[in-house]
Image 1 (cartoon, rainbow, N blue to C red):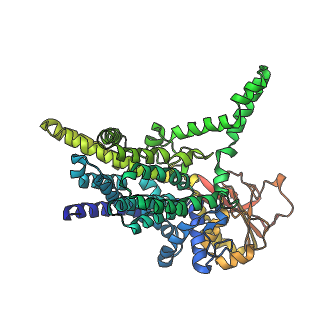
Image 2 (cartoon, rainbow, N blue to C red; image 1 turned 135 degrees about the vertical axis):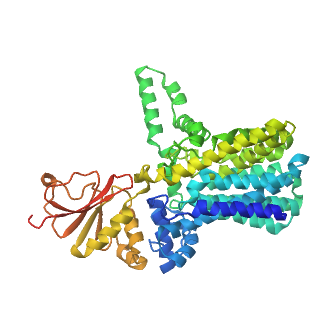
Amino acid sequence: MNRKSFFILASIVLLSLPISFYRLGEIPNGFHRDEAFLGYNAYSLLKTGKDINGNLLPTHLESFLYTPAGYSYFAIPAIVLIGLNEFAVRIPSAVFSVGTSVVIYFLTKKLLFQTKAPLLSKHRESISLLASFFYATTPWNIVLARTASVITVVVFFIALGMMLSLYWVETKKRLLLVSAFLAFFLSLCFYVAPYLFLLLFLPFFFLLIHKKIPRHEILVLGVCYIFFIVLPSFLTFTSESLSLRARSLSITNSPYVSLVLAEEIREDGVSNTPLFLTRVFHNKIVGLSQYFFETYSKHFSYQFFFTDQSFPDRYRVPLSGMLYLILFPLTFMGAYILFRTERSIALVLFAWIFLAPIGSSLASDDVPNIQRTLFMLPPLLILTALGGFFLYQSIQNNKRIYVLVPIIVFAVWIYSFVFFLHQYFVHGQRYRPWYRQEGYRQLVARIGELSSQFGHIVITDRESAPTIFFLFYNHYNPLTFQQETRSSVLRDFDRVSFGKYTFSQEECPLKLLDDREESQDSNTLYINSGLCKLPDDVTVHDEVKRTDGSVAFYILSLKESR
C-alpha cells in the first residue's frame, strides 16, 4: 500500500466513524429485546462468569434460544469501560463494521491480484478503495452497524477468512490457511446464518482455485474444512438444544405451508381427483420447495434492495432502501465485465452472492431478511466498484461525457446518501418505534421512583420480553437473579418473575371494574399496555409515550378507597 492509498483508506475509516458512532446509544431509539439479551448476558458473564441461566462460560445462550454467545463476550470490554448501557452493547457491532471496510479493501486487492487481465491488475488499488468506500457508506451496513447486530461481526470474519485464503493461495504459508479457517469458524460463534452458507460456498471456492493449490496442501485443506466447518455444523444441528433456534424458525414449522397444502388437498377431494395425483402434486416436499424458491427470489427483488419493505421491521428506514439505486447499474456492469475478463473470480463472487440467501430462505418469518443476508453485501459492492471503474475508463476518450457522467452519478449518489442519513437520523426516530420496544427505559426509570411505595409490581408483557429490560436497566445483580430463578418452573426468560416484579401475559393486568379479580389491591403497582382502556377507580401515576406520541404503557394503582 502506497502513501496515497493509506491516506484514502484512513479517510474512509474516519468517515465511517461518525456514521457508525454518532449518538449510537440513542439512535436508533428504543432498544430491541435481542440487544438487551446480548447485553445483560455480557454483564452476567462479566460479574459471575455465567450467563443469566447460570451456565458457566457458555458457547450458546440458553435464555436466547441457544443463540451463539460470541457477541456477549465481545461486549464485555465496552461494558467494563463505560458500564452497562445501550452504547456499550452496540459498540462491537459498530467497531466490526468499520473493520470490515478495511478488510474489504485488502480482500478486493488480493482478489484482483489473481487476475491476468492487465486493466484489473493495474488498477486494483483504485477499485479496492472504491469497494471499501461503498461498504462504509451503504445503508444496509450502516443500519445494522448501529444496533447490537451479530451479523456485522459475522461479515467481518467471513471477509477476513476470504482475504487470508487468498493470501495463502499466493504465499502457500500453511499458517494463513489455518488462520483463514479459524476466521470462518469464529463467524459461526456469533450467528446460525453462516453455517449453511460456509458449508456450501467454501468447497465451491476452493474448487474454482484448485489449480493454484499444491497437491500436498489438499489434505490439510480438507482437514481444516471438516474440523472448523463441518464438525461444528454437525454438532450444532444434531443437538436438540443448540439447533433450537434454527428449528423454531424453520420453514418446516411454517403454518402457511401447512394451510396451503391442506386447502389444496381439500379442493382435490371435492373435485374427486385420484388420490395418487393428490399425493404427487400436493405433498410436503412440493409445498416446502415452492415456499423456499418464493422466499429465495424475494432476496433479489426491487422491494428488498431499494424500498423500505425488507425485514425485520425494526431496521426499516422510511422511504429508503438498503442499496442506492443509482449504483445498481454499475453492479451489473461490473459483473458482466468481470465475467468476460476473469471468469473464475466472477464465479467466486457470483457463488458468494447467490448462496448467501439460502439459509434465510429456509426461515419461516421475516423474509426477505437484511440481517441474515448481510454477508452477500461485500461481493455486491466489489462488483459495483468494478463497474464504476470500468464506466470511468470507458468514457475517457469522450471529453464531454468524461466530465458529465461522473458529475451526474456523483451528484445523484450524494443526494441519495444525504437523503438516507436524513431519513434515518430524523424520520426514523418516529417511524414505527414499537418494533424496537421503545418505552422500556423510561418505564424502568419511572417504576424505580415509585417502587418504594408498593409491595408488588405487575407488568404486562404486551411489548415483549419485559424481564430482560428490567434486568438490564436496573443493572440487577446477575448472581441474585440466578439464585432467584434457579428453582423457577417457568424457563421462558422473556417473562420470568424476580424480586417484587411479576410479568403477566395479560395485556391489561389491571382490568376494568367488571372484569377485575378480587386479589387485586392498592399495594400493587400495575403496568398496563398503552392499548388498554383506563378504569375509573385507578390512580394514573404516569403514561410512557414513544417518540411518535403513542402511549406504550400506563402506570396505575387502585385508589385507596377501593
